[in-house]
Image (cartoon, rainbow, N blue to C red; front, top):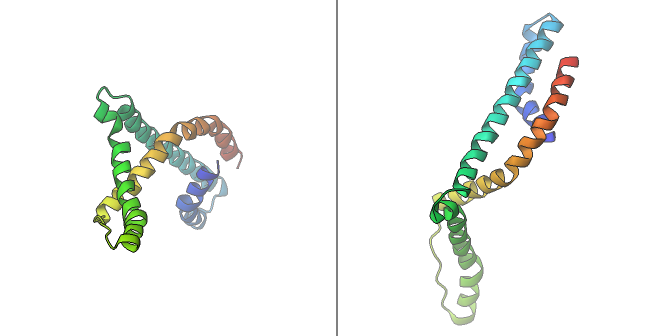
Amino acid sequence: MNLIGNILGTVAGPVFDVIDQAITDKDQAARLKAELKRRLIDQQDAGLQARMKVVLAEATGESWLQRNWRPLLMIVIVAIVANNYLLAPYLGAMFGVGLQLALPEQLWDLMTMGVGGYIAGRSGEKIVDTLRGKRGRLMDEIDTR
């Protein structure tokens, strides 16, 4: 619920201020805000559903590579990071030899996106279930404002 509140506050807050300034009828402004909140919640739900479907399709794919390419890529990137920041410095200090592998910025960005996708995939289902359960209560709350 805090996630939805944060999103609504960040995205809708400035728009709500404009609505308050532009529309003098308080009831009409409240209806407009409620509709905007509904649409933002629906959009968030649709985005989570889409991301979850992609990750689930990969996880349940027929091919071993299709199911495991993300984890394998993350393992390779983590191995490069561990080599560059753990293994190579110690080998260099102890033996004077330490091979560091290049880690281009794009690869680092890919790792952060991959971790984000993993986290979204693992928690997406819980978030969607939470949204579905709390959505009705939130809509009731919005309607009463």
